[in-house]
Length: 482
Image (cartoon, rainbow, N blue to C red):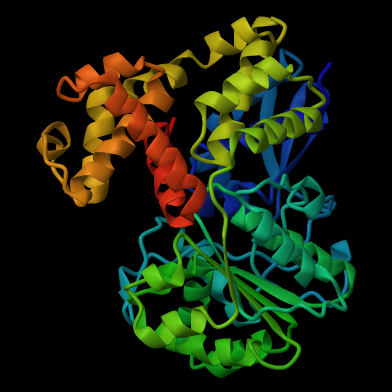
């Protein structure tokens, strides 16, 4: 029999991929569950939560519970958590010590319905009464953004793609660290582990009785708006400046929001001096954030800038097997290898594929074998195969290097065309497994020795030129983004 905690964890894992990140963090992550007879009771912080969950997510939750409970639960209800079973900690409230249930903060809800306030755009359709209750004390920066208890250094899987970012964050987590980089700027695509690393630092701060704030940029803007509208901006900034660490996720969302950006600059100056620390995260390197003017880009680059790249295959396999172990499941090595070979773009999709395998195993009662995994992921594999073909490889490479497919297929040998052609041939060899003669024929009837030379040249450049290697890996990821 699967225990209630496992059922609810699996439901949350599925919900994470069905809703937007901010919705999951704001509304679903704070929920907890326990079982009463044949009923799963979802515990919510207050009546506004109960109303919102019933209206927007209860049917999906019931469907997932039925899938994961294997007949052990007949009904799902949502009620206010009056007995305060919650043990997670708020992140946006400055934490001086581990709070007791009696002083956990009251919730806020996401953005108001007003279509535009002082240049800030609000689109979420949230109950107005809930908004007012939530924002009535927004200057106290109390919110429902919780530290994920699973996002610690101990659960983070390191590899070549993320090792520098991990080491930088781990060093910041030490109370007496002598290698501080301020600000620490972490960049990379969504779903690669940036938030995991930032939460890990926050956990370490908490354990050493240091205080911090964690903001998504959207939440930061929301609370700035409230403060500006109610002439409490100085109170808002004063509260933030009291803590030791400020973390702002998805900082690129501030671009174009002049008032929020300017207010953030004043906080930036305070947290990059003395003993304070600032951690920022974005989807790209500061130099590529052209929506910001130069003063922002230069400040973002003052400290240490580290990338979190898509994990290489060995790291993907470790992630899968570690995640499986956390579920109490055994994932055979050949199954982990198959998943890792077919899902390469980010960790979230990797975990999503693993959840799909486990769901299939639970529903069918079949053991986890390579054949079962291949069946469970047949749609993902089909999408990948569809993307990885000669025509698409040439098209993606041509767009990446701003040349035409006709040029890649043609006979011009200028460097700006010959190099993309060689890269396309090397990618075709790696991703399709076709023979050298077949690839040569598909590239305008070229000899197989031309393809061999192209593959050797690309391998040489990848080994000696990090920028070239990064572009090659980015192209491969784009073509395999299942």
